[in-house]
Length: 257
Ligand code: MG
Image 1 (cartoon, helix red, strand yellow):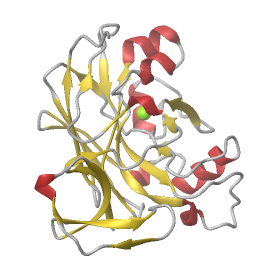
Image 2 (tube, rainbow, N blue to C red):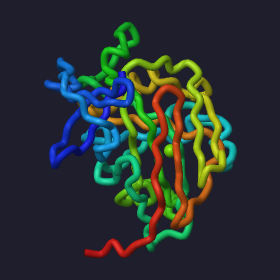
Image 3 (cartoon, protein in one colour):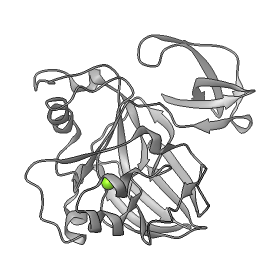
Image 4 (tube, rainbow, N blue to C red):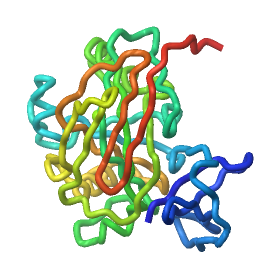
């Protein structure tokens, strides 16, 4: 099932896509819901980020070739960091190039969206009970600031540095999903989720042994090889098999207010 969150006639609605038409749901995507009969044409809505998380937990260096391309060792345990929810933008919203940076990179990633509160997930528990679905995520990074600071917070946290969407997909087999990134239509990343160093069930157990995961929280599972810079005016697209394409443009504007 493909679930979209969108604005339609000044209302924010969550709906399920069936044959290019959106059907609003009644209830909560995290619990029980019914699909209503009223149909909304996709062309009349503005898509929003699929959920509003309390936190975004990201994986660094979870694909071997990406660790190597940045000259890092292959990690022996997951390397995690946080991105603030204030960085989220939806499909087709602009990524704002900050004046503080001279090198802003794309990182195409598979996002996991948490369904219900989980702490200390056990190996014998069904991890899929805690996952609502999957989406595309762009872990936008000011690479020069990441290297300068020696830690990730500033480089990863600018407003608009977490494009997310276009929908969430509830039923996906994670074994071997192709992930592709296109910069102005040119293929720049081509990876496969089967090549994650630490797979999703392990990540859920590891992260939930550190912090409680809440409904709507996002785990961005790391980027494959091929990261590189974007410039103002560029269009960046993250495409994952079975989910769709997350598309955003880069802009340089004065953010002071
Ligand atoms: Mg990343």
